[in-house]
Length: 217
Image (cartoon, rainbow, N blue to C red; front, top):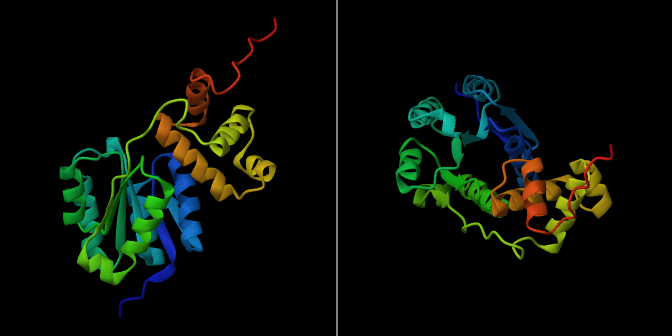
């Protein structure tokens, strides 16, 4: 007899430490009490076999090559009731079609907003929406420029520039760590940054942060 899926568990395959942390926070916010994550496709498959999650989020990396959809198809064939969402940098219709053909219930590009991912998760887990039309969220183009960051995002990135952790930023601003991660997600998307250091450098170059003082000899 096949074991039922655990509706409180999700498996996340994500090679990027930043995205792993950010997406984990959003999945917890959506309602998953157990987020089992891995940077390895082999390990992710083992986690799926052991935990029988209701959702698998596959962070597609550029280094995955052209056979990534074969991996998805294999996971879907072995666990046909498992809902799969692809999180990817690829925005072309060919990649989206490959993911959906391989069994994905949703496709979200990395520059989409946290709300887009939340929506895709909810739609993927809704049988009516899943069978009617798989959720695809491409999101708006990044708006890069001095006015592209909100006052709250500027507060967050200013604290990042001072070297504060997400927990410290959350305490300082009176918000949750998940909210901090959401702000960082949007900042990275809008200014096309890959990590905290690059985000600080770009925002400082935009004139929105004080210039770093040279070290005193």
